[in-house]
Length: 189
Image 1 (cartoon, helix red, strand yellow):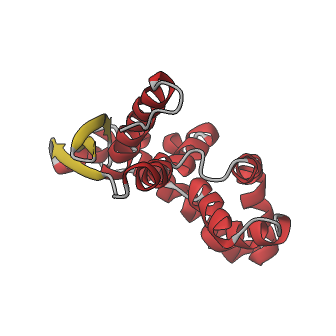
Image 2 (tube, one colour):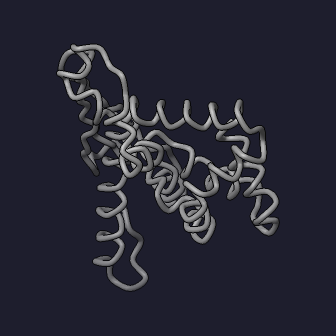
């Protein structure tokens, strides 16, 4: 439901964007991280009914739980009021983020940006190594991204995706710094 509303809005509002750019805008807005931020701003975590174990382990602040709750709220609005009510609700929550993403599609998707830069400069894809630690209810992930076989960025997060995004962000900064330090006309590696 959420993805469809955002995709429909983007298609109608930004007809000048390519299909790929529209997909990046949608992906940048319809994510666990964004929904968790919105849910936290709304105070959704405090309203959740959780089991004792989940509550004791910080479940009210877990991005995946808060994001899922926001999606459930959107579903409830749809069931109660229909498409127009759900679209109005979603766009009220995410309209500003959609506009920001459309102004610079893909800017928050560091993995995509890194992949594009690495393919352009090195002719190959970056490779991620991810390790998870901790019990199932409180996992923590560490990621390292290798570019042309060389470690270029490390990152951490509560999901594999978040850790990879953080590593890609670090690698992009590293590659940009290399580019800035390269002498005029020199090929960077």
